[in-house]
Image (tube, rainbow, N blue to C red):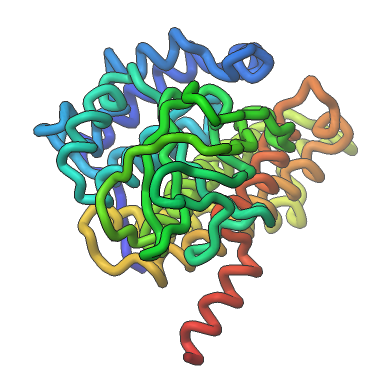
Amino acid sequence: MMQFDPTEEQEELVGMLRDLLSSRSDSGAVRRAMESESGYDADLWRVLCEEIGAASLAIPEEFGGAGFTAFETHLVLEELGAAMTPSPYLGTVAIAAQAVLCSGDADACERLLPGIAAGETTAALVWADDRGLFDATRFGVSFDGASLSGTAPLVIDGSTADVLLVLAATSDGVGLFEVAGDAAGVTRVATPAMDTTLRFAQVTFDGAAAVRIGNAVDTERLRDIAATAVTALQVGGARRILDLTVEYSKQRVQFGRQIGSFQALKHRMADMHLLVETATTASRAAASAVASGAELGPLAALAKTWASDAFSTVAGEAVQLHGGIAITWEHDAHLYFKRAHATRELFGSPEAIRVREAERLLA
């Protein structure tokens, strides 16, 4: 099996993130953040961007970034996923910034990326069609040559983003457009989500003026980049809930013994460990392809299906192995369980991806 272990420099990044999140994003802090108006801790976001430089990692130096790659961004997402930290990182840095870079529009990169790299600008990619699907050929918004019209649901951080990047149908194919979040003709309505650490919105455009970014948009690669980013949250979360389950199994006593000493439970946790490790490898393989510009489609499909199934299974097993305590609001197991099922659908469910890949192979 191929390994994608972090380098020494990347391990230092991970270590800094874990230290920060352990002190600033524990269970109580996560709950306070997800219940706040913005949905995240603005001061923690500032520290992540200004002191660690997390938002700048995959942005080239000529656009105000640190000049690393999407693999470093992936490692940041893993740690945010492990801690269940609410933040604009997924929507702004891992998806929207990558959409701008993929456009190849130097003017747009110079205009938008420095603010994102500094943590001063948040952005959201408007994509899903009226069915709530992230189809590479069907869009809920259209451009008539002068303005945008239509509605898109499930926009990550769509209620609060400073900039909206809109994928819209045009007379010559799909286009990517830039619109200010508070522009005339734009209506944003927050959408309740199963995973309350993630914020979604339905965004409607009614003759909203927009600036086109680039010419051609490779929506399939952009979808695969977004799906790969989601897998980082998934494997990080799966790793943490497994660790919590193993720790609990050493503390919980039943019939005079630690439950972790029972052979049947050892086997179940070993299976969970295998799922986490293989999902992490698949996820990082896809991230490596994003970073290098290599062919991504099959790797992204494998990563999203495997990580989604693995996280759902591990989270479900964790709830069972924790017993009754896991279904209480006070325990964090339900947060991971909800995250697993919410992200399973984001940018393609495993079932939809398998159908899509089967059709591709048979074509």
